[in-house]
Length: 297
Image (cartoon, rainbow, N blue to C red; front, side, top):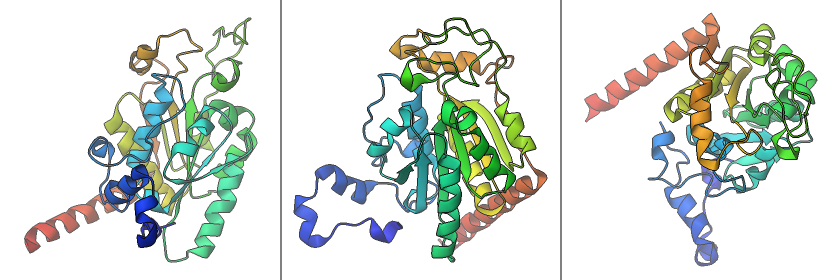
């Protein structure tokens, strides 16, 4: 881990795949202020994926990877599901956990990294679907929040089990009928953002992946706050267009429709006063640094 490790031995340079050489030479590792606008001009940290054409998860994945403050010093923890099909293509250290125990793995990992690198910030980011986060893994998700573990949890909310045929999940809408849930969901969508807030998370956001600039801001805030203060949670609607009967080009519109002011994914943000003060201090330091650099020129 670390930018110093992301280099090619001179003796092996000629035989390395061109894609890897390009990643080392023009990726965004170590770039201060990196973001989604670097996509297309710098080497992406995800070049291809095995998800369905038009899958909103692939959009969200790209925006998240582009928004990590320090991908060279980040470890992502995933779980079984559609996301686990993408991690093998991601140029960020990652661990595939058993279904549902991703927050337990992240807990041990974060603590070990703090011991191993006491003078260096190492970010841990959990990324899993609604089945792993709110159903099978809910206990481990909540316990990590109760303990105040310093890492970010991101849930790709498909509102069903997308990877295994469309079974009902706790985050599915009430009354929704899926291929493997023919009688329809009988209870309301679990309010995990509210539970996260009540469980000690410093920063909680409910959103879609339709606006890359907004995703970038949220992910950066979540990672920064988790570094210093405690757990953060981001729930992103990434509809499975295959299972909800949409065409491959309709995923973006589905998210836009679901984030309207009266809809279930209208943008909602909760932030503690402590986290607000911390972000304000970070912003002031950035402005002071920019002013100093401008004066030096």
